[in-house]
Image (tube, rainbow, N blue to C red):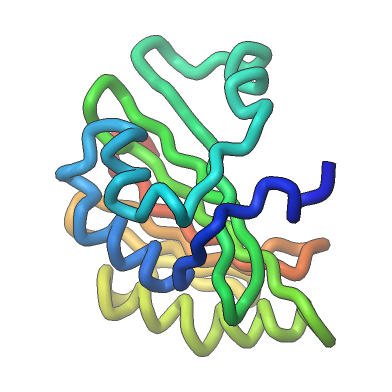
Amino acid sequence: MTPQAHDPSGSLSYLWLLDTVFNAFRELSSHVQLVQRLGPANLTEVPGSQLIEAVLPLPPGHVQRTYQFRDASLGRGVVDAAFHVTELVNLRAQLFFRGWFPNAKARKYLDQVLVPWYRRKLGEPWQQHPDYCLFNSAGLVGVARFVPGTPSVSAYLTDQHYA
C-alpha cells in the first residue's frame, strides 16, 4: 500500500503537533488522549504497528502506536508514541518533505525551524552535529535531526528517565 492510502482526512502543522505534545507531555496518559489532543481527523493509526510490537516487544507496561499525519504545506509524516502504564515516555515525529530538492528542504528546516524551536523550549543543545542536536532540560531529552538517506527530519521528546 502507498503512504497516501493511510492519509488522515485532516491535516496539522508539524510545529503545532510538537508544540501541543510539548505543552501536554506530562498530562497525556494514553494514546486515546494523544489522538484527542491532536485531533482524531488529523491522525491515522498505521496498520502493522501492533505487529511490530509483537515481534519486537517493549518492556512490560509499555505500549507504542504509530500514526500518520499530513502537514498541508510541508509533507507527510509519522508519529510514534510510547506510554509506560499512564505516562507518555517517548514521542517521535518524523516529517518527509516533498517536491523539488526535498533533502535540501529537510536540512534547511532542521537548521532554520526545528533547532530554533528546541532552543526556545529547552535551551541550548548539549551536543551539536551537522545532522542533529541534543537537548536536555525540564526532565525532557529532545533530539532534532536530519535523517540521512531520506528527505526528512525527526523530532524526539523523551522523559529523561527513559532516555
